Amino acid sequence: MTQPATNSRASNSDTILDYDAIVIGAGVAGLYQLYKLRNIGMRVRVFEAGTGVGGTWYWNRYPGARFDSESYSYGYSFSQELLDEWDWSEHFASQPEILRYLQHVADKFDLVKDIQFSSEVQSAIYSDDTRSWEIRLQDGSRFRSRFLITGIGLLSQPTLPRIPGIDSFKGQSFHTSRWPHEPVSYTGKRVAVIGTGATGVQTIQEVCKDVGHLTVFQRRPNWCAPLHNSKIEPDEMREIRANYEEIFETCNQTAAGFLHTADKRSTFEVSEEERYEFWENLYASKGFGIWQGNFKDVLTSPKANEAMSEFVADKIRQRVDDPETAEKLIPKDHGFGTRRVPLETRYYESYNRDNVELIDIIETPIEKITPGGIVTADREFEFDLIIYATGFDAILGSYNKIDIAGVNGRRLKEQWSEELSTFLGIQINNFPNLFMILGPHALLGNNPRSIEFNVEWITDLIEHMTAQNMTRAEATTKAVAGWYQHVLEQGEGLLANQIDSWMTGVNSNLDGRQERIVARYSGTQSTFRKRCNEVVESGYAELNLM
Ligand code: NA7
Image (cartoon, rainbow, N blue to C red; front, side, top):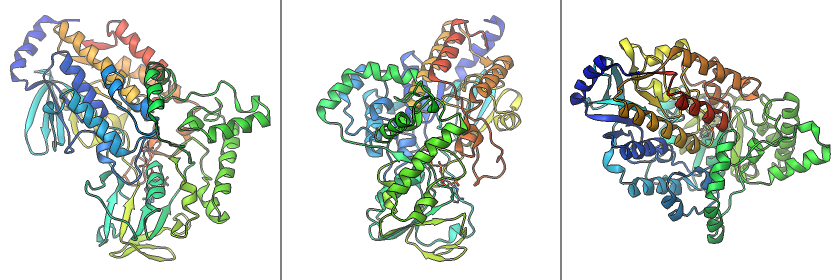
């Protein structure tokens, strides 16, 4: 509801605004948000810590980095011209191609002129007097805007293991998401990889082809499944292009925005023969079908999950020559699909090579890192290069890194340490005019599908406010509490929420916060979209707009 007296105060403050909106991050989210806000006539500035666009795909340059989503399901859907002109070369494109795509988008829509690179945001402080945010960069410069939008990623703050002596290593060492821009030669070298998540798996299967010797330090194995990547021939690309509408419509209907959707049958409803035939087909198919397109109870029923896990365990046993190594590669503490399934290309066969060795660091823990290598409980290893594929301070890490203060100086970090809650994963009570693109309790998965929806929702709200001469938007505490309950309800019964992983906020390399949290929304794209659309249809009744 418009409150004229207060509004005149706020509109007087317009003269002190540098921008209408500031966006943090020039990845998939930030680029599209800039494009959309500029289209409604806003003065927008994007601050980006990197030296170029791309976000996740700018930072993650490690060997073997590529999509696990089908390329054509991941790109932007908003521009027919872009869809018409961009050819994907592989079903699951590699990082250099993805980065080229995002650079092409930035060039095509002339986005770079409004992006300031090498600009890490240090703090964001809200003022209720002026209904605006003051953004301070690491170099001390400050900018004020009405709206603040974060496109800062879920997996953007890398974490290194806390191993004694880690800084003493004299060879080269990199976290995968801070891989140098210039080529790193590992040909013929003695290389270590610590970590066997989705990133470690992609790295290991790639570098093992060239290194002199590769030692993989594995704490817990993950359930991996074949990617089945292949080139996209021109005819196939034409067919994909003709089907874009259907492709995006499918993604918008599935649980997590992927092309794959759960089978309507449950695991034991079908005969054993049918069950194994179905699983064999999934194992032989491209992408996340085996995870997202499995029987409907595989990710919720312990019994169904156990049967599926046993099926995949047998595949691992068949693919790895040494039975002892195979057993080490089979997870024993969680079932298939309860953590993010790394998709692989001859990952398991990597361990059949003479130059690859697997060290189980639960059995023989790493004791220290020395100038020459790594010392475990029973051996000393010499390395030229150590690769840390040890993951991220996921979901909250990128928010905790910025000092964000809302109404009356309320710190976001403090508020979230009391209770992690948001409204739609987009807004937070006490933090007016702050909008998150894929914040906590947002719908994750094939992220561009959620990003486009979120960006459009935020843009529509800002456009609505501008048309009504409104300058302050804040989710009501009731709306936040309602969304929190909904998020918990949607996550009930999901085996993944009962397992330690980045999706439940557990990271052994951080101080504190080792209790599992529900950090993401586990409902489907359609439930999420329906709920967001209801908010619009009600005239944004769950937001205090003024
Ligand atoms: P993940 O999935 O968090 O994996 C990190 C890996 O590193 C995992 O195997 C961890 O073992 C291991 N790790 C972490 N800390 C240590 C220490 N201190 N010692 C030994 N091993 C360690 O990160 P990724 O980068 O692979 O993937 C993140 C997401 O990015 C992925 O899901 C995709 O969506 C893209 P653990 O399992 O914790 O025992």
